[in-house]
Length: 237
Image (cartoon, rainbow, N blue to C red; front, side):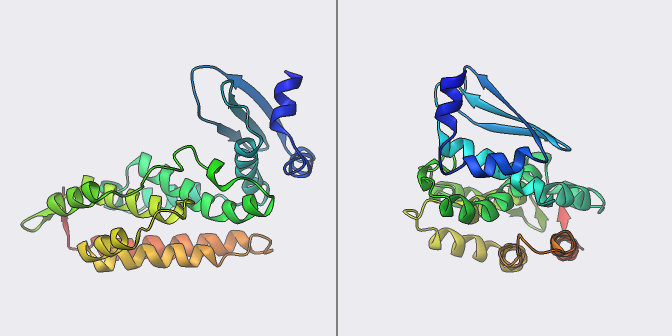
């Protein structure tokens, strides 16, 4: 186990780990039959699951940064989920999987600059780093199934939002998503701008602000209000 711990810790993440361990209990569990790192947290306790086949300090740092956001009391994903669930109609277009995905993407947008500042490898930030997050085929699928006559397809709205946030959180600079973003905008300009506003506001959040909870709650509240206005009078199935 010690050799595995040695492989997970280096001069880039040791100070972060020690800082977190002062206020947070962190367990490490090595698992087989997976190549994916993940972190499960409850209150001030977290378990980081490490694939035995890929002992990587940079991937471990990624999971530490998820805990770091908890340390900073940033729970944007949970706040978004509870806010959406509190609005009649929005559940039609936000599956549990989508809400989890959006929360994770927003976390990643905040984590990536810190991750890079620590000196970690950009290509190790996410497991699907080399995957195009919105192909032409996927964009055509959305266009083709967006709505039938005056009825919007709820699954396509969910898919659209998933693609949008995946693009925005993609750390791979080799992908040029300008055509994909333009395509999403053409499908529904207002929906596109509402989500652009959320991301742009989120990127302005100061992680060291004393009022960060009020800040991200206000951003989520405004976003949910805008989305509620967007679905109003729409027939969605």
